[in-house]
Image (cartoon, rainbow, N blue to C red):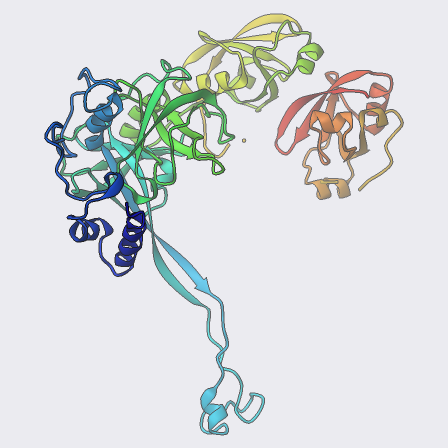
Length: 516
């Protein structure tokens, strides 16, 4: 057997590629009659005892009784074949203006002809001076690509916001090679979803949105997309986890999968074994090709009506900054468990402020939804229609209270320090503080008048372990206002643990501290 043949194919096809010839068509024509080892042939007919397969565009009923190991096709192949006509390649382009720096050019004429007639009288030397060039600006068309899938027969396509954000043109390419120009219907950066539409196209193949809450870690899933321009690539894996938070925002709730997802897959469908979309492929871990993340279909379903009707998503607003309850915070507030969302700040004149919610309250129920952790509250509030009245249950000083809140509308625009020696009593907590002076306010960019500023956090000490930073402003200790650095030192002098309220930028948060 000649083992050099596969290498020959790669080298020949690569050469043809750089010569401007399509590698696929070139290889098919040149090597069609070669008796290929390992099944690498071009046009070899199937053996008589095997049925010839149908074309790639054939539609296969997803309900066919076909499973892995029986018959010609696996269940994965059946589902992928059925879904492929609804999956599209999204090609975009945007105009980028770049400025090139000034590079002086020598006055060659002046140098060659002794300064006449091109010499600059004010320039140095007989040949005149270098001729300056103005900075040049040039426009470039930058192409990009992603994936999408059809969700309505009249041309609505779901994809990622980052695929189509700030682009000039969008072209959609279907499985059969036809193309159509698309326009943006609506976008939601907070969930990284976008709805686009192709015009003058109807009766399209549609993928249904399934129930992403039904899937479990370990369930099989199929990803279809356009990685690196390789259109309609099919990969298979399982659901690795649910509810992943990636730090993108308060609405993070990603499905993690080990089905291979790469650049270009963004916006493509993640399918369950019924052929329903249970996720929109969105992000990857760049250090691994088996850690991908998809936006749950239920989240997409909840905002699609607004994207279609108004082009944007209107979310409810409560007006609180919240944080999770650690074990130390649970003990400091005397709570029975760690469920709920701790209110670290209340925005003045917000719905929460008008309803009587206070800093230090623990929200345990919002309407009919029990709040186990902060993101439960964020999602529940966001999904509540503006103007609705909702009953909110809080725990305050060990007692439950019920409050009525009228939900407002979230506006998209809403959201260091001169040293002096620390007073005695703070060293055991690993921090130094100072009264706020004008110089310290300017140095740490502090606007408030109350509290004391943290001027040093000892590495490895209790304050560092709790997350305190230089420049934080301590405004309360054990729920009492801090007047100055001496008052803070007195309050912490003999304490084994304290609960401090810290102002950091525009936000406040509770931090439990324990002495070494």
